[in-house]
Image 1: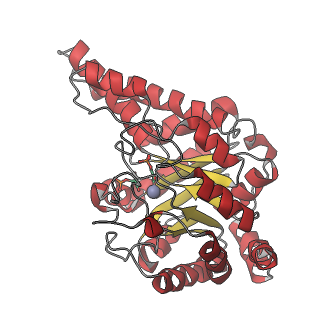
Image 2: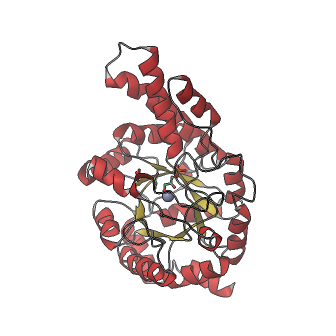
Length: 359
Ligand code: G3H
Ligand code: 13P
Ligand code: ZN
């Protein structure tokens, strides 16, 4: 069993200057695809489940699957993370089901739609961090609201995301406020807003600095050099996947994601966790369409799922390699949750706070 906390994994990534892709899953095929890719290139793994994924697959199914993946791949450190937790209950039930890390997304109210006040965000995130750290689990917080600098709107895909118009102040994390947020909440990782959004329709053109504000990440990293930064909405929406989908009956309008080179630039400036869901969905959906159109008599789900799983595996491996994560699994000796809890209790993991005070 090699379930690792987010904090230990990202500390390792920071020491060795790499980033870890965090892939969302909803089912067994996605779990296997990620682990096969990780095994092939010796990469540590973050698998994350949204509230939607937990409702879709059932908590027991998901948690037993994570245990199974850890057992099948004992040499691959596996962080099991709650994506976009909306309140204490979501985060604590995730930990109860064996997650080693949770995101408390207090940038939005518990409805997952309404932008929250700064004070609300601090209070909720600090409260979850205190409870999670007591059992050794890690916490990611979010400051700033994900959404498009082009349209001035968040996205409300799949029931999570800000609704309505957002100002640039909301869409871009303020570096000064980030220092205060990390000090007050004691989060292990900080998700920032820099113009990325969830889903396939992020940008109407290849993004430049006006619509993908990488300079904001650099400014935050300067103020918080020891804080692990997280980029959400980091799918690259590869043109080739759009083309496969559209050549087999799909009707995806032309769109652009976050170029892998920009993520690599982010990794040079403190980004350690990179959230990717849409690219995996597209890789799989492209194969479903291809099989459905190329072999109209086919009805065995495995004939659809196997090529889909292989395509997702290849995509995951490309990201592990591009982010410098490959080759690091065997360098990590996983620390048990109890030891992490002891370290939080004795202040040994307060270095982020100490560093930000000094800044
Ligand atoms: O948070 C965004 C992820 O893409 C998860 O999406 O809520 O449809 O599972 P989901
Ligand atoms: P994408 O939609 O860009 O894959 O982002 C996923 C994400 O941020 C999950 O939290
Ligand atoms: Zn996200």
